[in-house]
Structure formats: structure tokens, C-alpha cells
Length: 175
Length: 103
Image (tube, rainbow over all chains, first blue to last red; front, side, top):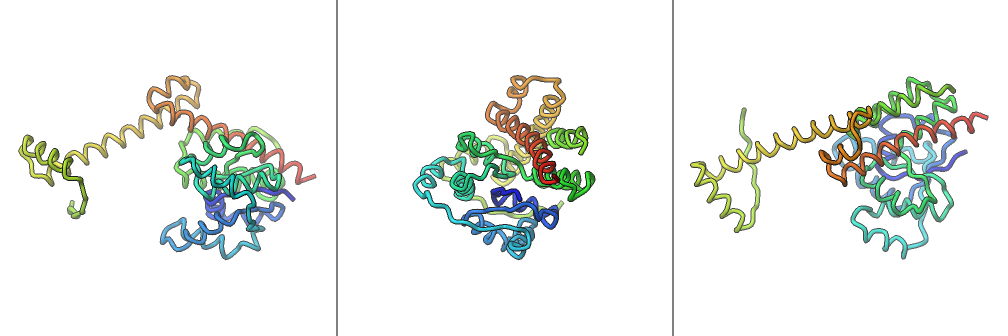
């Protein structure tokens, strides 16, 4: 079992790709604030809202566990930076307090801010980490992994060349 | 195409400048605002296309990060470079963990 902290953007990306059901070997931990954000987003009448709804309904099935953070002083210091919001700050603190090595986010602004504050103790990754894990642990095919990465990249409006490079990397390595 | 009315609030000083410029251009306030916003949206879209092209060239190794920064600005270039690194590392890390889980 591998433990990974996720923020709202990563959870929504993964819910959209429908690959959570193959991720039984991954335990997702989220802080309270991310749960609150998802609970709020689920009321939106758009794709984010639809996917947030799926997350709330499937927390248990998808191994998503909500945890509290302890260090509120650190939280207050982090959110003084306009580049980092409360959900992301709590995600980083959760990872640090529980010695969780990886945190996934798909928000460009967050990637920048989280890298800045992780002090090298937490690896900041994109949600495309999950299709790559599932492919190399034989839970999903190469084709499914690629489809998931393309879906995430399009949803996040990432430049084509950037995510193409990730697909090429996936092709390059044999299982 | 049908035009849909919108309400926009401006502060008084800016509105005075808008009215002055509209008058100088022989346009009504609405016409003037419509023209400059249309032009601004066009320019923004062109800029986005240009930025996308610059990122493509950079990923292909045809231009340097410094050259890309001239089009994107230093801030955005740093963020794009970090996103590229994060995506690459996510795939490589995923391979490593996936293989471990398989054992």
C-alpha cells in the first residue's frame, strides 16, 4: 500500500478519469480543508461540480481518508503567502506531520508554491502520477494510462508539448 | 450576431477618460468600450497562441528558456519549466512505485 496526499485539483482530475476504482493499493489522505473545498465545489453546476460529487459519494470505496492537521501556527504562516491557499497549505502540513513522501496537485500556482515550502521533504507531483503507478503495477493498460493523462492535460489546459513529453516517457520504458 | 447587454461598473475618473476618448473617436460610450474590449480579447488570444508556440519550440529544444522568457515573461517561464519538471518526475516516479507494488 502506498500513501499519497492529494489536494482538490488532483482529486477532481482523477475523479474525471474514472481510474480511482483501479487504485486499491493507494491510500489517499486529504486534510479537512480539502474535504470542505470538495463539499463546496459539488454544488457547482459544471464538470468540477459533477466530479466533486463523485468524490464525496465514493470516499470509502476510493480509499480517501480525511485527517486533521495539528500545526495551526504553521498553517497561518503559510497562508500569508498569496500563492498558497488554505487547502494546499493543509495538504502540505498533513504530508509533513505524517511523513508522507508525496503530495499530488494539478494547480500550476500550487505546484510552484508547494515546491517552495516543502523544503525538499515532500515530493510535489501531478495527478498523472496515479495512471503511471497503475500502469506499471499492471492495474491498467498502457492505453488506459495514456487516455487518463490526455484527459487530465486537456482538462487542465496544459500545453500539448508538455504532456506529450510525459506520454513519450511512458512509451520509452518497458514494464 | 445578437448583442447581449452587460452591466459594468467603472470608477468616475476612468469613466470620464473613457467618455473623452469616445468623443475624440466619434463614438458613443458603448461603441468605444465594445471596440477596445474586442481588440483586447483578440490581442490576448493572439498572445496565448504565440506563447503556446514558444513553449512548443522550447520543449523541442529549438529555443532556450531565456528566449522563451522574452515572450512569456520570467514568472510564467519559471512556472512552465516547473510544470514540465513535475510532469516528467510524476511519470518516472509512477513507474518506480508501480514496479515496487507489482513485486
